[in-house]
Image (cartoon, rainbow, N blue to C red; front, side, top):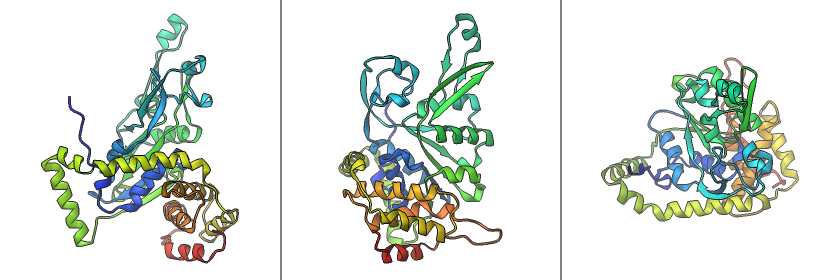
Length: 341
């Protein structure tokens, strides 16, 4: 069976904020994922699936159902931890789909209780979270997900592990994943508890510029006419982006920021009435990650602006009947006038 042809990520016209948010999460999985909100036909699902071809290659434990990191003992499964030397494979990150209709057992996995009682050993049937470890977990129409599945995702996202307990038998495995959700706001809202868990949120709209809209149509028709030729045409740009992401991952630990930047970010959050401290911390991480992607080791005002635009909009305090739209230009002016960065 031939490999499915995905529309090239670099061929997507416009939607720069969406593409940047996805790229930043590839570079730094600790950003907390990204939620993409928008009307139908705005390349939300296309962009996520297109990530497959620009995902970085990484080390993983050979034969491990959880694709454990051979170099990180703290987050390995029990089987990998038992081995003195873990055999290494090199493979790309994957995009793992979580269907809205998925049952809890399909998501978390299941335990064979009869096998445990008969043989005195645990037998675990892996679920979606097992495959999602160290990969991208993608949920289309995430706002339509059942509440109990949302609770499972929240627990795993917060702890980095998935725990299953049945009839007194328990099993735990690593479940560190980048959560990517897409939704159409017209079909319902997302629970506030889950919305706040997303590090970055992007709202997308259809292109209104006639030239860009024409280009969207032209490229899509070319892809449908001959996907092989179209993919080949964009291969150089795909390879360049993949290389840039890989270099950014290596550079990430070297990026530094001026100390006064923390105070500036705190001031911005307070002035906007942002609850809690997750926004502040995520904004620093996003600015650092953006600096790595741009290839410099000191965070600039431009990096902070990019971070603010992706981190703040969904975290502003909302009052009944009040429009809480973020005035991003006011935030930009505050950043520009600061001496911190």
